[in-house]
Amino acid sequence: MQKYTALTLAILGASGLTACSTTPATSVAEPVSKAQQLAQKYIIVDTHIDVPYRLHKDWEDVSVATKRGEFDYPRAIQGGLNAPFMSIYIPASYERNGGGYQLANQLIDNMEALVGRSPGKFAMAHDSKDVLAQFGSGKVSLALGMENGTPIEGKLENLQHFYQRGIRYITLAHSESNHIADSSYDIRRKWRGLSPFGKELVTAMNNIGMMIDISHVSDEAFYQTVALSKAPVIASHSSLRSYTPGFERNMDDDMIKALAKNGGVVQINFGSSFVTAMANQYGALRKAAAKQAGVADDDAFELAFRKKHPYPFATLDTVLDHIDHVVKLVGIDYVGIGSDYDGVGDSLPVGLKDVSTYPNLIDGLLKRGYSETDIEKILSGNLLRVWRAVEQYALAQSL
Image (cartoon, rainbow, N blue to C red; front, side, top):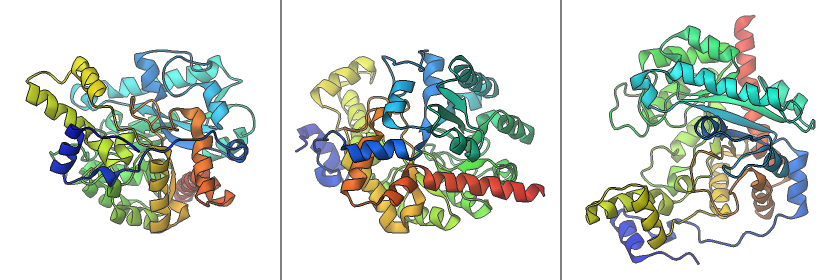
């Protein structure tokens, strides 16, 4: 059973949560051979892996085994990962200070250079047909998603530019509101949803064949987006608010129903703070302790605090609970994987620590009674359905 310190329990009580809000820790067995076979048999699409920005800040050669991070080629092959969406992440500060367009192009350049250096291991995937064609080749197909629409800079010609460079979804905003949409993290709701340009951008993205990602945006921006979009939208790396009360970054049940009605898909984020209330409150717990001690909440304090109050990691079962919830609420066709590997720091669940561990997820799904057909939909089928629908809508507009 997971242990909780007195301080942790006090914070939970103050926030209206309880220790039973999260699934008790369980040991994770080695995946059975059936799960390993299915990981290799079916395409695995993970819609959010933060490799580009990780390498921009701290370069490593991910074509070979690396000492840091959660993604490299050997581990991807081991886990059966065929088609990760590499996140072209633009920090929110670039909206204020400029330079987002340049950074986005640099990160795309870096992914193309990775393919150029290791053409036997990686290939760019510019559409859903590329993913299917490259499956079984031994290559990891690199699709691109832009996390934060700041580089669009209010210009539809920039949307065209980034489409030509391979971007196939845009997360409209990130940790602060931008010129497109309000952020779920930003208490200043300048636009009360989408900006006038944001509404124009939704239509333009439909018409060009680019998926719209509503992870990170405010609830108002979400509902406006699904009302405007003529094609299915995605939540590329979000989990469920029913497990993290008050955390607007996640989706509540009404939003999941609206997303399913739109034909879209929620790609479950693996980060512990996204899937358990305990981990979600941990940062507030640490900040409160620093304030009480009269010291800065810096790296040194965080290290000391974590030794005294261990981080309440989620488990494989907790992530599976989120998948189960979506399936019970709206059906098997509207859930997938958006792990946020390389993007959530040291907060990944027990049993899902890097891209080699997808067989653990598959093993858990098998034990919960999911069929192979269901598992294939979760691993890639649902996302590929949405991607194809977006492509087909754009094609119809061009005829």
